[in-house]
Image (tube, rainbow, N blue to C red; front, side, top):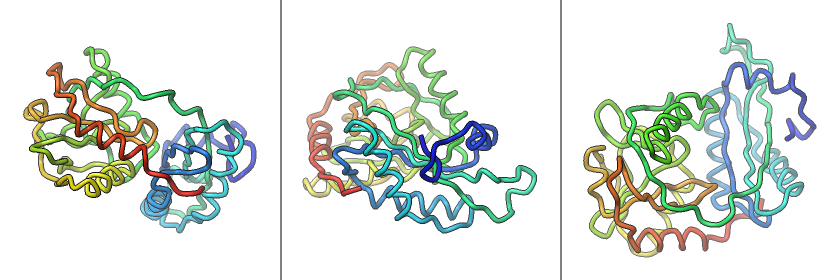
Length: 261
């Protein structure tokens, strides 16, 4: 763990822990290559402007991420977090000087089994930003697990499916890929999977999907940089078809070469 390229002290990250105001992106680094690296950098730059009104030096960010990846066995999961250690809780509108915290951990081994989802009414604060405040998402994940599911699937007060705590969700319908139309994070992996689908000649669309109807689709999957394309086993206890199309999308995503970090 390093902050701006140097070892981190407890005092350095205390503001992040106590205030939770910041943003991040998580990348799977394999042999110093990252799928959708440009999209990860665009996200960090966009979110830095949104939260701090400051331009982020993404060239420096890549250097710090590469340094972390070199220090860990491949593949690894590298997370880049941007926050301001000097943020004044009483005056957050003051000029910010964000810092870059880079952490790394081992990547999961092998493909994960299909995931069982339980729907929960919840919308993240500022869904378009990948913010560090995970209280609500973790609380909903915990509640879903206590009900016997593996993870939570969010829907709004209008009943429309949106996303999960740390992933996007895609559905299959009539041979095509459908993304839910609702406030959610524009995911890097979801964008790449959409490109894979288009390259395979699979129709891609975005439209509202009601929570009550989500378990009647022809299949579904979650999309996340760490776990890739993961089939959905069930929604609210109702089994979903394990579609060959999901396996095609997963294989196409895995074959993406990635960009040099």
